[in-house]
Length: 145
Image 1 (cartoon, rainbow, N blue to C red):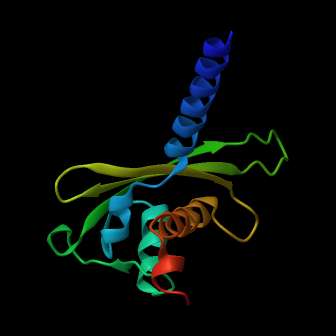
Image 2: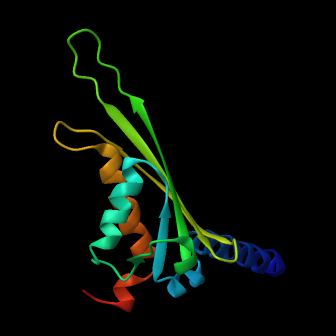
Image 3: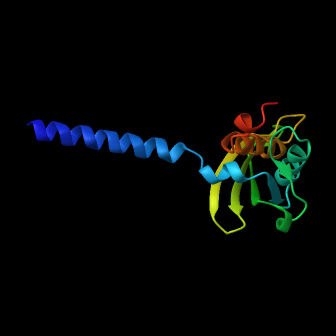
């Protein structure tokens, strides 16, 4: 009975360790400073603008050779309907993959945001993606601004 209890406790500890490890950013993200943004969409444009503004510890690289990593951004929009006389609108799903020069994928996330009357959901999602990247890269610990 005692052995069964010990095995159960070990199993629970192992499962909780796996669950928390999954949410931890790759430690190699702390080595990334210059990011090249690849993508030809409004989310990628907004991501470049956000990095260019220097509000995080990450900076925008003008080409992949001068970057520590490449952030590939893809964006898809989907109509939210709106029949005859309706306003409709779009919701955007923006995905980003951060790859080191070695080719290792170290970060992958997506953000979803809907258009509103004055702003593009794609641009907002691109900006949110960069903010999340900066948080996961430890910018607050590296450079408290």
